[in-house]
Length: 112
Image 1 (cartoon, one colour):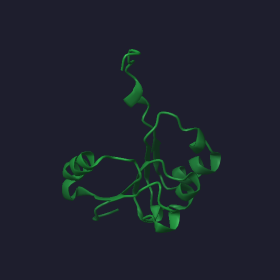
Image 2 (cartoon, helix red, strand yellow):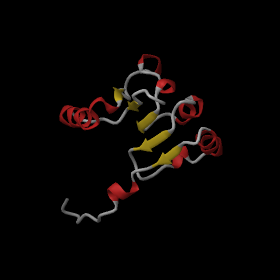
Image 3 (cartoon, rainbow, N blue to C red):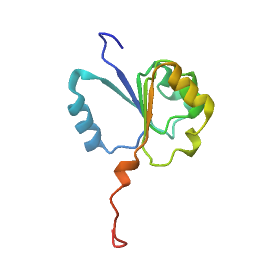
Image 4 (cartoon, rainbow, N blue to C red):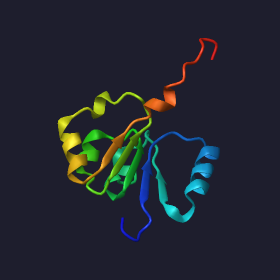
């Protein structure tokens, strides 16, 4: 990632407006690769070429993706990622794993 634009691998289902806003927000600071979860893995952009993963990446692919230094999942829950080998893999590359728990922190009345 030194002197290069980081690659953000994203399989979150953003709408077109949100995608444009995200691209505008990072400007030339990062390359964003959007992946559709419905596509078979062999037709998706490879996670192993990314520096940042956002959405719901496959845990086994994260373990093998040695360039990924930051994993931001799009949910508060992380049960499928709660694996020792995944924690070890992220730590071995001085990476960070974060979830979206604070996104859902504000209570919502039942009329939402």
